[in-house]
Length: 178
Image (cartoon, rainbow, N blue to C red):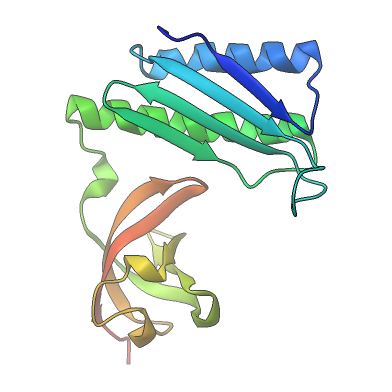
């Protein structure tokens, strides 16, 4: 890294072993992408704002031409919050490196599935494909749109890696099962 690692805490103090663990995880990031320019890790303690009881971890990885930002919702245990944030950073950096190399993930081709569950009032649902349920958000549904979906609706989608695992993007309606 050209810019030294910066670890910031807010409303928290990290013991030396936890700070050392953060440094080790940042070093591991360079196995996914060797041209990291800098990294900033912010750990917010449970005393801040309206998130009482939860530690939040914010990671910004600076790479040529971009900043990769990882925001984790948090956890009651700071070690778990740090672990989950760095797992997400590993995935995001690995995906970034693949895109730079021009590699296409096998799952980036359009697939067909059916809507398995839908939570209309909350704006998301799950589609079933290859025996798995994959999350989708209302903003990922192409016109005629999310409000036309119901359980059993056939869709075509592209799968991508989200912050919390696989998710469907570019969801288009094919028809219903009726």
